Length: 368
View (cartoon, rainbow, N blue to C red):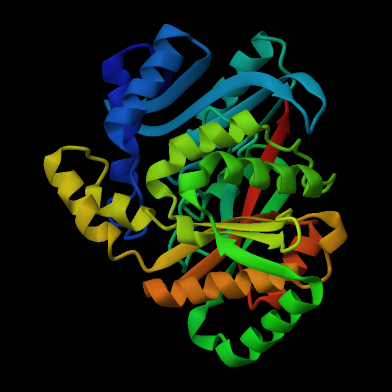
């Protein structure tokens, strides 16, 4: 058994395929689109050399892997911090130790004294974390999914909790439409507000309004700077295939159309990706078109209200509009999050809308 540093396209293909064998009997496993991931890894690992990929090999078979990079950390106030992702490992502590200790050694040689993860690759602000609880529920788009024993592997290697994020599940079946509609309508009349889905024919205006709400509502608990308008443009461009306009709601004042709140949800395309099995050939694309119309779960990813309208029920009304759209599309399962564990206001709003805590995701850190 040995740990190797990956430097060739052939090795990166094995790096990608390693997860398929690990999750071969797991009905919830969602493979990456392999061609896209290989192209990205080739650029970052082989050409630019900004990321390092390691694998543990035994009898010619990859049994563990990890990808990591060095960047500044706003949260830790460090100019040089290690960030790891794509961590996968069989359930053997000695294998995990070999892999993680080699990563630590390489980082220390480059004057890095702290490493944390898992993060979404190529974006340290997009926290994913190791899934700790909630394995009975299907993974949702843009969230983590991993083996339950990963918590033990990391903690036994000296990693500790940096922070948790949480998600909530909501049942459409228990939604009291008549009662909540009455309450929502009273709220809209009282504050002279209205809620409408995003209008993609006026995309520039919608992006401006979403950015204004997020920038005003961002706080220290979230501990991220608000995304710039350019960031939102890139997000919309990258997610265009996954965004359904009638799952994005903007609440505005009637007198001047000022945006005061937003709620954005994304259909769970993981159910489609699972059917595609990491392939992007013509047969996989036909499957995607077929199963796209059969998505029955949605994840709420953004929920913001500007300070002067917080604690007034605007979140409540936004969720009401969202639930109506879910009923229209036959959505039976909703997951909201992820939310920072100490963001009590956001958690309260989700719980008030009927959310039940179901998953915890943990960012782990380790001093080197």
